[in-house]
Image (tube, rainbow over all chains, first blue to last red; front, side, top):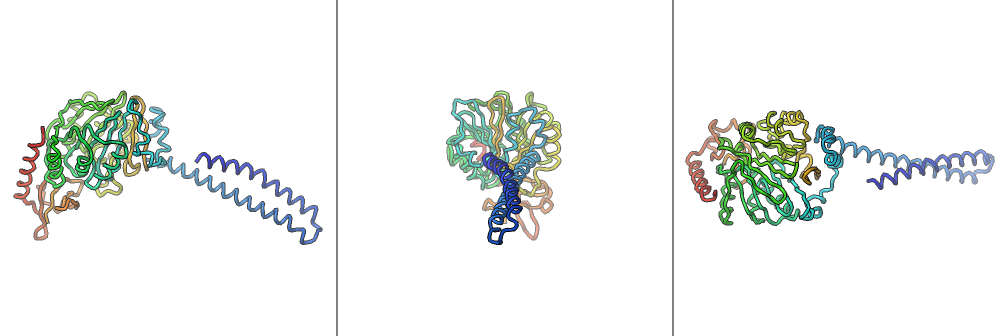
Length: 372
Length: 70
């Protein structure tokens, strides 16, 4: 894009010099040779045509440049609309805010093809919010190790499997199924078939769907066990650690039983909330000392039944991510939730608008890449 | 036709068909005491909870869960 812009600028300058020169030359010729016969008038006519062609080229070049500028503006505009309050972010974290203008123009191929995988000794933690439509799936890479939280619906199983393979993943230290709803655990069977899993963490909460039933059958068939989340328990994933924050008790609704974890890497914290609603949020607020997080996975696809003002104010996120499908029937994310998030001054990323979203932490700063 | 309620989202119950595809049933068409995990059947023009099948499924799933969780 920069090269094209330079060529266009050079063309403009050249054209501005040449066109008047030709005109002056033509006028001069007409004055001197006015009395000459018709045949000789061909020379100035050809020059005039050349001049007109040049003018047309200049105009076309100008229009092309204007269009490219307009495209850039549109990209910036949409990025600002999604990632609201970008000024706040700029002052907070210059390095992470600046790529957001270009965020919507990132090339998909640069994500998940393994080419950007940092050497294992580098202190980098990546959090990938994989676009699975209406559902959740989050990959966390830390050094050489990886873990996955949810895998969307059954139909997303293949998408997530391919994404992980393309990112160079062959095994998972932890596989978390936040709660037994099919938009979270549907794709887990594909993952268990395709990768070696060390530890599966799921709440001991029942559902009777075939999807859940067959997942249990597969886990048994593979000779694996399931670990219940215990609030306060800490796990290590190479350079990062994560702590279980919920569920603290058994709730009636399946959503409130979601496993909630806070992942820490240096100065950066990420909060993953599954589909918790108001009741679980309140209990987390009551039971948790450190709840602040730079990045918050907005609970339950941005539903109004979650993300209370008190919860958001306590977490104080800089960035929020809503995992949500385009034109979903449930009208997620709800406008009331968006307003509450905007009120705490956080930027909003959405998988329906931004595609898969990747956060890279070096322990102090965060950079963000999107694929749409 | 047998359906299993996977979850509720707003005005809909997201139900799993026997072939693991899904259908959104308006909540108001379901009995008021319908819960996640209930097996429902469509008979005489309305949805009803198949309590017997629901209990059987819940018991079977609980048994499997007890074997798998640490």
